[in-house]
Image 1 (cartoon, rainbow, N blue to C red):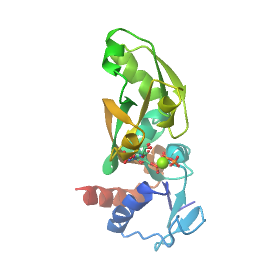
Image 2: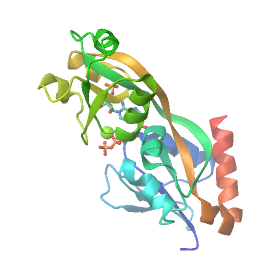
Image 3: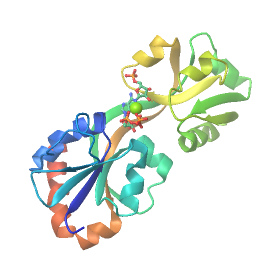
Amino acid sequence: MNGITIALSKGRIFEETLPLLAAAGIVPLEHPESSRKLIIGTNRPDVRVVIVRASDTPTYVQYGAADLGIAGRDVLLEHGGVGLYQPLDLKIAQCRMCVAAPAGFDYQAAVRRGARLSVATKYIHTAREHFAAKGVHVDLIKLYGSMELAPLVGLADAIVDLVSSGSTLKANNLVVVEEILQISSRLIVNQAALKMKREALQPLISAFAGAVG
Ligand code: PRT
Ligand code: MG
């Protein structure tokens, strides 16, 4: 494909990317919530958007199926970033990655006495590094979503998950016991595409940079 392919996930990343695309003069012709199309054209005949699962965005860009994409730092840390150039923090889709536990569980005391904790998460890699750096002994349990349920039904003592408003934790009687990382989304670019298509990609990257401020 000679033009530019941009990989985006629907939901918050698509919504918060629209103003950045607009700053680059790009307007998608359809909305992924109302259209079932996975390839969406734009007002520019040489630019298209492909709709992917958030955790798949780095993979599409790594293999060059998309020239660029937008992915959360959480997703990039799990992916590893191989083959990706990450020129910009777009400061969108912000949240915190946290350890959370039931309100009645004394996490700090358990850590102090060296207890072995079971922790459920989608973010195995980041969680492993965090607990290893703190010297906390953990058994990690991989889940693909709804981590909040795990401590409520005895699957785990704690979870590692993303928190923005905090209302999901609150609704499930969980509290943040440790903050791991501040998360925002980054622009990712295929390294080979950046060389081969620099003339087409550079103005877009610059427009994004200008829009972030
Ligand atoms: O939804 P799906 O399973 O397809 O994939 P996904 O959850 O990875 O995608 P999506 O679109 O929900 O999130 C894309 C990116 O947005 C993530 O990779 C993060 O970088 C970023 N982001 C920002 C968030 C949140 N805020 C967030 N609050 N991603 C998820 N959440 C979830 C969180 O996991 C928890 O279940 O929202 C819930 C907590 O929200 P509050 O407001 O109740 O605290
Ligand atoms: Mg989600």
